[in-house]
Length: 77
Image (cartoon, rainbow, N blue to C red; front, side, top):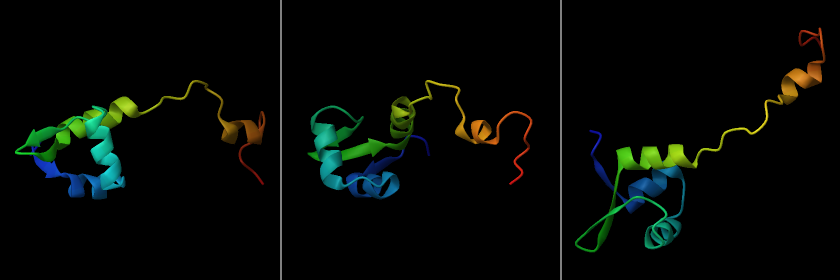
C-alpha cells in the first residue's frame, strides 16, 4: 500500500535513525510528515521520494577499482 502511514518508531527502525532525530527533522520541516491529533505519521511513498532526493550522485567518473588495475590489466593479482 503506497499511501501507508507509519509511526515514528517504525520509520526509525526502517531508516536506522533515532526517533529524537526524526522529531527534530519534522520540527524543522526537513522530512515529509503528517500530524494527526498531535502524533507524527509518515507516508512511505513520500519517505521513499525524500530519500531519493537526498541521494548524492558522484561528481566524478573516477573509479578507483579500474584505476588500480591500470591500462590493459584484467584484475590479475
